[in-house]
Picture 1: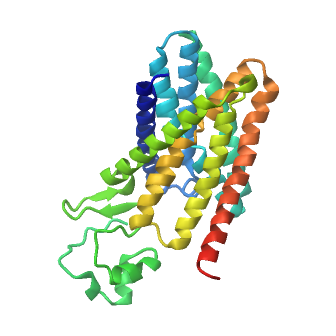
Picture 2: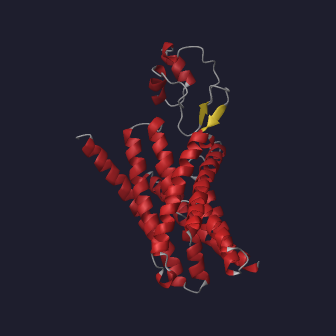
Picture 3: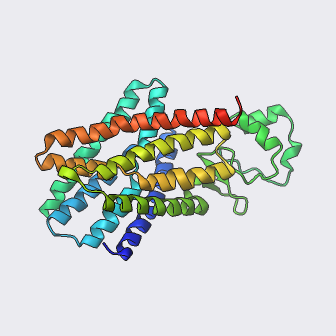
Length: 130
Length: 195
């Protein structure tokens, strides 16, 4: 991996993080009007599941030799890596646990994990078809 | 939370508590606004601030300053993740690097957010640090998509045991790391306060 590739991937990660900020804010603004969703971190869930699907898709495309390596690194490791976040998801799960909201915590922890891995599997399978 | 009132009055003149109660949602903000010498600062950290130039409300997550802080932090965080990932091997397809990255990132984010909250409301320099280091660096450093996609690869590759254990271990150890970070920051802030 060249220095240029590493820097391109890093910059894509910065852009991904900014997309996460904007999208999370937009989702938070919408979900604030819903009684059920206003106290659940639905933005992080949407971000992590969609990012897992897209990374899986890129991995599948790479396996099928249907996408150039630089593109897969820039969009996968960079953009999707910066877009999705584990630290915030984990923090939010712990905050739900501290609030004794067991169901919401389980959904945000185990639920997000199962859905995201399933999205990753789906992405890889779809990508391989290309 | 969006108040398009004319700003020709000095906010310090408004000392009637009923007036404050009417205008403000979180009561703790009343104190800030009464002695506010910088009314352009937001009243509510996670919703809107009023752009005085245009009179339009500009949400935090769409402000150029916020986005630039997060881009800068996210670039650094992604660079560090990439370098660690390139340096460490993947025995049996197990992404040890991503595991270590996600656990250390969860620990540091827990400590950061708890430390910031204990020092005061999410505004000004504290918010800038949260956006730069929390949302930016640690958000770019840790990754959920690699966790999910690597697990998916292990499962599709027929390694069901590792494909289940790796994500579950990340989830459980990650929650413990977040909690440890929160408790650590509490101790540090308390010790710093001399209590």
